[in-house]
Image 1 (tube, rainbow, N blue to C red):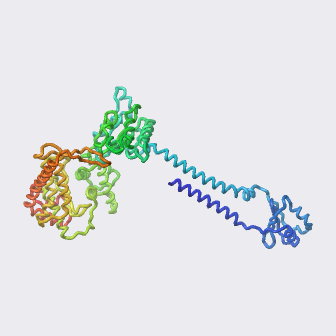
Image 2: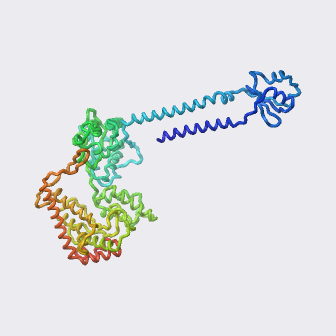
Length: 606
C-alpha cells in the first residue's frame, strides 16, 4: 500500500510540473503578427527601434514598446527584404539588428518537447503499472517463503541465562544444547547424538520464549523464530512450503536454533478433524515431522518449541528422534519470584522501604510475566502520582490491581449495600481466621475491584503443592462464610455471593471427579479429560460414567458443601462479636490490613 501511494504521488507531481511548464511557456507575451509591407512602412516612418532576426521570423521592437513578428519566406534574410522594398540606407540608421543564434533551444521547445513530454508521461504511467504488477506477482510467489525472524549471533540485545531467573532445572537441561552448539565434536567423538528437538512446556508467562532466546545467546548462534500460526495460510500447501523454506534457511546457517512458538497451532493430533489427511494443518505437521527426522540429516539444526497445551500434541512429535527432550517450566516458587523481581527492578528507582522478599511472599502463583507486570504497574502508578521513586505500598497496590483489577472508588453504593458488603467480607475473614488450615488473612477491603464488590486477601505462608481433603473442606467453608454471614444477620442472602457459591461447587466437584476423595464413590476419577474434536468443536470432557453415577456425584457434591457449611456456621455463631468489630472497622476505614485485623479478632492466631 505504501508503494502504491508513493507511485501515485510521483505521477501527480510529474503532471503538475508538466502543467507548470506549459503554463509558463504559454503565458509568454506573443508578438502581433504583421506583413512585410507593414514592416517596411514602419521602418520608413522611423517607428522601429530594433529587429531580431530568428530562424523563421523577424521580431520587431517599436518605439511605443510594442512588439511585432513578421514571418520569413524560407531563408530570406533581412538584407534581401530591404533590397526588395528599396528601403533607403539612412532609414536603417539607429535600428538595432540582432541575428539570433540558431541553437537547438527553439527546436526543443517548439518541436520535440510537445511530442516527447506526453510520450514520456505515458511511458512512466505504464512503467509504474508494470512495476506494481510485478510486485504483486512477487508477493504472490513469496507465500511459500518462511517469514521467520532471524536474530544475529552478534545481536547487542541478546539474552543469556543470567537474564532468566529461576527455572534452574530447565537451564541445566538446556546447557547440553549450548555445549553441543559450541563444540559438537566433543559429543560426536563418543558417539553421542544431541536431541533433535527440545519441547518447552509450562503455563503462560513462565518464560519459555525467553529461555529459548537465552540458549541462542549463550551459544552465540543464529536464532530463527516463528509462531505456529504463521505457517498456515489460506492457500493449500503454503504451510508445508514455509516449513521447507525455514529449514532450508537454517541449514545454510548451521549451527543454529529454530524456535517455533505455540507449536500446538499446527501440531495437534491428526485424523480427528473433518479435513482428513489432506487438511492444510496436517500437511504442515507432516512436513515438520519429515524435516526433523526424515531421510536428510539436520546436524547442527536444533529445534526448540514451546507450548502450554502438551496434551493436544500429536504423538509423532513427542517420540524419540523429534522432540525427544521435554523441559517443564513450573510456576516460580518463593525464592525464584524474588530473583525474578530483582531482575525486573534493575532499571526502576525503588524506594529504601521496598522489600522484594515480602513482595514475593505476597505473589504466590504468579508467573514471571505477572511479576514483570506488577513492577510495571507500580512504575505507572508512581509516574501518575508525580513521584520519583517506587514505594512498597505502591507495589502492593499493583499486586491487587493485577489480581483483581483497578479500584473502583467512584462506584456509588447505598449505605445498606455497603453494610452488607462489610458483613460479607467480615464473614470470609473471620471463618478463615478461626479455621486451622486455610491461608492467613492479609487484607480485607470493601472497595470494589474489577467485578468484585469487596475482597478478602488470603496468602499462604509457604509454597505448597499437595493438599488434603480437610484443607479443601475448610476452604469451602471460607467460601461460604460471606453467604452464611449475610443469612445470619439479615435472614436472607443477596446476589453478591454468586461467585463464592460457584467456586465452592466447582471445588467440591473436583474433590470427587479429579482427586478421588469421596469415601462413598471410592478412589477413582470421573470424566475423560482427553481433548476430542468433533465437527469442528472441542469437547473437553467425555462422560465415562452412567446417569446413576452422575446422581451419586451430585449427592457427594452436596455432602461436601454441607460439611463446609456446618464448619462455617459454627464459627459464625461462636464469633459473632468478632464479625461485628471487623464490620464496624470496615465501614469506617473500608480497608483493613493484617495487623489491624488481628487486633480486632480473638483466638490463638490473634
